[in-house]
Length: 83
Image (cartoon, rainbow, N blue to C red):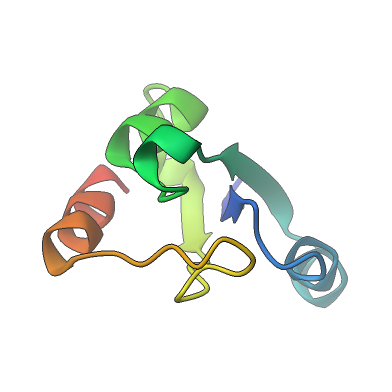
C-alpha cells in the first residue's frame, strides 16, 4: 500500500485529513531532538526498510510546526533521494 509520510511531530490534523480525503495510509515517522526534529534519510530508511517506493507523499510543514525545524537544500535533496 502507498503511504503518506508525516514527520512526527506535525500538525495534528494532517493525518486525519489525509485519511478522510484519500483514504491514505498515514505513516508517522518519529523525529528526534538530536537532529533538531528534522526528518533524515536514516529515519525514512528505518520506517520503510527496503521498500521506500511505498511512500507516495511526504508532507513537510515548513518550518515544521510545532518544532520550528527547517531544512537546508542539501537535507531536502537527501530526503528526496531517500524516497
